[in-house]
Length: 381
Image 1: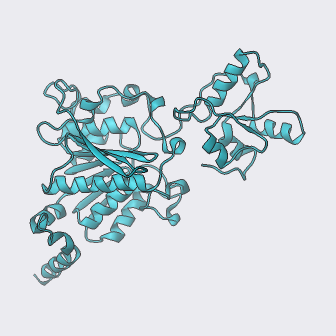
Image 2 (image 1 turned 180 degrees about the vertical axis):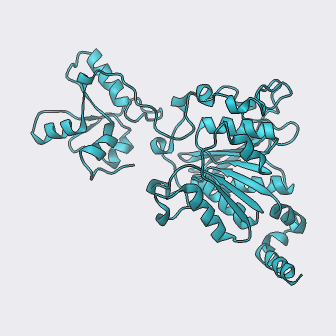
Image 3 (image 1 turned 30 degrees about the vertical axis):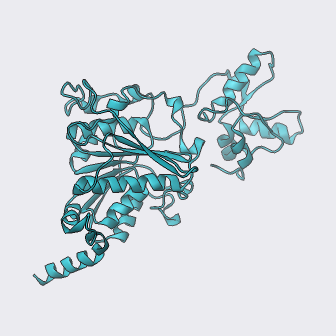
């Protein structure tokens, strides 16, 4: 009995600033402490979402991620420390959440969300936060939540913009497919490594995802179901737009759904989205013959021997300014669309050769290969 009194006193002290809120109170805190929330992704969005859910007192917190912490993550993925670089993201995030609140249960799922495990994972929790970074996972997670009838806090951030909504909530709450029945083309989906992202932007969206999860599991406030919150961080603007209700005939969440608990595991999300379940670089194309390409070592040797050569850098100018091969010329190719590392240079060489410049050649692997094989001092980014 004494131990229970001590525990209760500790909880009241820890969560007192939430409990004293007239709009929240003891009942909402009790619901939060009894709730289970799954965060899929321990990156820029998942970092603040998981930390704030842990601090707020969610009873059981699950974190799904299969990647390792990289140094380039640290400017926005604030749940990880320098000491965690090279370690597993799910384990690093779980340790950080336990350090914030040792009274909650934190579960690290060191795996990739896949058709074969998504439904089981989702069913183990009351609500889900989509902190992923690719179309494959977004559709898969939305489908799993639709089948399992779990509310989904879905957010995204890239560059200086972000957006947030709540899917699969209530009788008329749409799923991701209701709004986007066709997947976007892979080349239209930007990646942080190409388009960039300002550190606080995913922090804002991820924090709002945590807020939506708190509202959903406690029943307090008005969740962002059927509303899309949009952030323009540079201009300091936020606004919401109204979204449609469930789509009649949706293959995932309607009465006529064809994506079910029986079929979800076999659904080909890679074919549907044209993408893989990660934020990896696009696959390397083979547009040129071997004779039209040379290795980084061969290019370095030619430059060191003083051989006449014009090195043309087709990356966006801001990336050229980060680092470039000495003496190279900046000639950005197709500015305005997502950068296709290692592929744009092949496209440019093909165009040059088609237009009579038969000496044009491509360097195999681009500047990532140059850094790995020719110049170790060249910065990776």
